[in-house]
Amino acid sequence: MNECTICKKIKEEKEKFYKLLNKPVYLCKEHLKEALLLNPKLYQDKEIQKEEICPVCQLEKRIISYYDGNFSDLCLYHLKYFEDKIPENTWKILIKEWEDYLKHIHNVIESYSYNKTPLKENNVMEILNLLLGTGRKIR
Image (cartoon, rainbow, N blue to C red):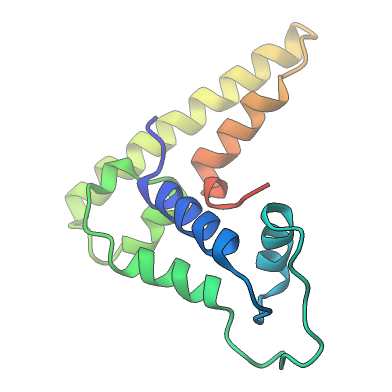
């Protein structure tokens, strides 16, 4: 499977945003964690209202809404955003590929279990990234 183009773009744009951030702005809990990982000098200002919209959430939504690339390059998480925009025949083909991939993952996990060989953490993370779109998160 290819790397999800939306996840990759979101991750790149968020990294730029966090590194250039030089004043306190409201960030949701998830994005504040990421920002502090990349730019530990940041802090959450007590003056900032919690009702404000997180600019990073807005950035993610904007990247997703402007996507016009190949749907076959997307992780399952982002593919589901475009379900109504994809022709039914194409959707069935793409979902079939993901179902086949999921069966393959089950086989891989079972083979490790039977052989008493532990599944490597990076293999698990790669599987989760492809299925859940977690490549968009910065750890």
